[in-house]
Amino acid sequence: MAKYSDIKGFTVQTLSTDTIASQAAGGSWASGGDLNTARRRLLGSGIQTAAIAVAGYSTAAQAIAEQYNGSSWTEVADLNTSRDSGGMTGLAPYSATMYFGGGNPNTAASEQFNGSSWTEVADLNAAHNLAFGVGATSTAALEGGGETPPIVATVEKYDGSSWTEVGDLNTGRAFAAGTGSSTAAIVFGGEPPSTLANAEQWNGSSWTEVGDLNTGRTSLGGSGATYTEALAFGGKSPAVANTENFDGTSWTEVADLSTVRGGGPMGAGTSALSIAAGGNNPGGNLASTEEWTAPSTFNQIQEGQLFFNSTANAFKETITDIPGATWASGGDLNTARLGAAGNGIQTAALAISGSVPPPSANVEQYNGSSWTEINNVNTIRSTGGGAGTTTAGLFFGGNTPPDSANTETWDGSNWTEVNDMNTARRNVAGNGTQTAALVIGGYNTANRAQTESWDGSSWTEVNDLNTARSAPYSIGTTAAALAFGGRPNTGVTELWDGTSWTEVSDLNQPRGQLGGAGTSTNGVAYGGSTAPTAGSYAQTEFWNGTSWTEVSDMATARSMISASGASGASALAAGGTTDGGGTQPAATEEWTASLANKTITAS
Image 1 (cartoon, rainbow, N blue to C red):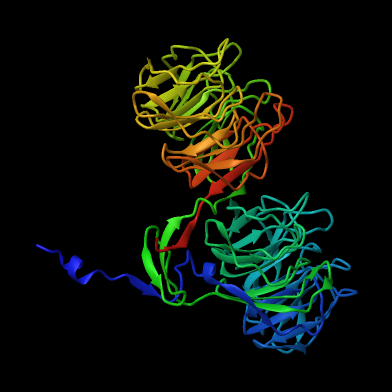
Image 2: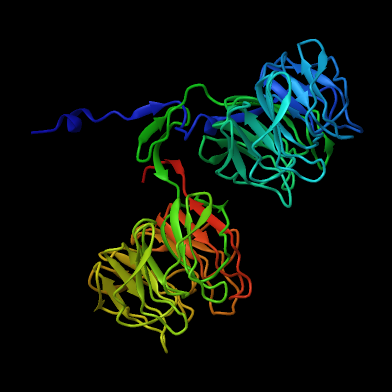
């Protein structure tokens, strides 16, 4: 009997626009009316159609205030004290806002606006320039950071009559931006000693570090309705047009400003409707205004969905966009090192042992933004292998010296020595779980082809690799694994089917001492070198189950990385060496592939 769908066909969802990841992801900037006075280091308050831009610097510090009606700026009453780079209540109605602190020269003066004039109120406890300010009303504000000089981490809170010092920032900074209220705020970016990507949230009593900006910068603009919903735009790193949206957990790059602008452009509004004005770039001070608008209704992106875009007249499918994936900065290791083993996923990983040098027992755990030192392994060694998770891990082999067969399990709190490998060796590759793992290749007097399988209590020798090698990398499971690269310089890739190894397509860039993440059908290989003293690689390659394709490079070329990740769409690279051992970066990079809509073409 014929099926109904065979007779009538089936319905494909029809949409007028592509699906998007979030409201902000569909946003864009458009031109608005110019300020009457071009200037930098100004501040703003209000919403996109009713805002105020206050103070700043043109050829000198300014007292100017201008009001925006959604299309043009009109000068209103000046501040009593000329200044730039102070703090301001950003969420407040433009007709009931507050400006405090600032410089040229530094001042502690605070002023409230009532819609027609400014009135001086209680001074800050300390005169700060280049501080950030947030607040929802003219009687409840938060001011922090900046310089007195020097750069400070102090924070003050206004209750409508006086300022009181409250909990300090974790990172002292100037030229930062922020949004929120006096009891729930976020601050991001700034400097020094270099441009910061760091972001911190305020809960009314203390600051907590949250996800970093993708692009560290100083002298940026910011807006948002709450501390879990913000926009960061412009800034200097050097001068950029980048815009990022914070969703309460992490920052995502969205549409750029039309004009590159640093120098502290003013920001006001929400992540759906915002305004940016002023600032500067290499061409000088700016008067231009841009309006950010995100769709009020949108279709959420979902992996695997099929739809017809009636505007583009095209069928589309939503996929994980590996070719479009990029590396972004994560939190630095507390101890820079090379040859550390890794396990876990991008947001929950371990960096195990390694060499500082000398070899170390140190172990650190990553939570998706920062590393924390935890209990050390029992046996100091470098270039061992790792498997499992942050609560059920396995660490094996390595070099103390001499070469080690030692195996240890991790229960989330402590390391316990268990049965040794059959063959002691260093520069091994490993994969799997705490109860089902493989150790592959390595070196002990010569390059090794041995493979051993772990069943949760002991190691058993199984079929060898076809090509003996030191310092390969392996991903997958005891039933389906991939081993690739190694020394001497090779791109050889082999596939494990649970019983034996079969050679498949080689890496495009032969290398050893590399990192990797994923499965035997969906993985990435990154970093590595050709020899112990050779320069390192930044190349990343994607494995689709059949062949390798080059994709985006790492920001820092390096080898002997601590690598982690569950798929080719999500990986972590920490530490390593850029030159074979002399230089060990502590930097962490995160590899992320997002969803994308791909046009389906008829063949």
